[in-house]
Amino acid sequence: MNAKDALLKDIDAFCRKYGFGKSEFGAAAMGYCSFIRQACAHVEMREKTITRAREWMAKYEAGLSKEQHRAIARGPAGGFVTGPEMARLLSLVEAPTSEDDCWLWQGSTGKQGYGQICRRWKQMKAHRVFYEFYIGDIPKGLVIDHLCRNTACVNPLHLEPVTSAENTRRGLRGNSWLRTELKRLPPQKRKPFQEQESSNCRNPAVSAAG
Image (cartoon, rainbow, N blue to C red; front, top):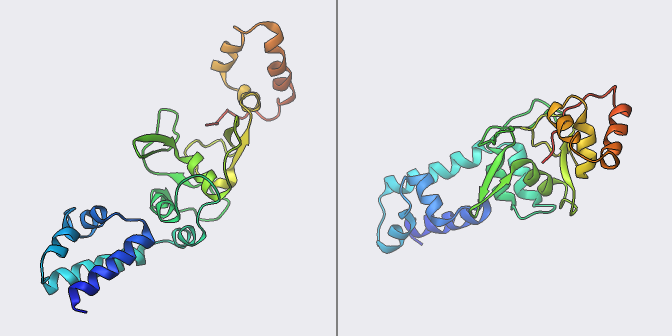
């Protein structure tokens, strides 16, 4: 096996392990999407090109954090994001100093500070994707409440599935917009929220669900 064929074989294994498409690898490693297609079409490949591709793969693997390696090895508990995809998403998270710290999303965010992920032309909230990968599928009809009250956090240990009503109750105290909206409800529908508000007087947390 010559050097070019050996490289292509290693690239194929690399792409399967880390979830790269052929065009994605070419764009990331060599700067143009058609690298692998052109490499297959030509008989020879310059030694400089082979070295550059191998150096990029080695650099990528060396740059992965322990949590990224762990995500690749463990696979998903639920949802549809694979281990290699989660490793890439983790590169957009500020490295926490301890396991109890918030995992702060550094990628795209919405108006309320929730992390956003675009996959297959569909936009999703980052914290929901992280919860499903590490914990499991979100039960139907429930939303995710941020126990840390930080909407940019994607630490699965800081997230809890709750009903919309429960999340509203938790966030009612200190949320003037919700109070205004509740005034528009009939008294019989307003009562459960008001009762919960009085019981939560010592926990004025602002709602952070998604």
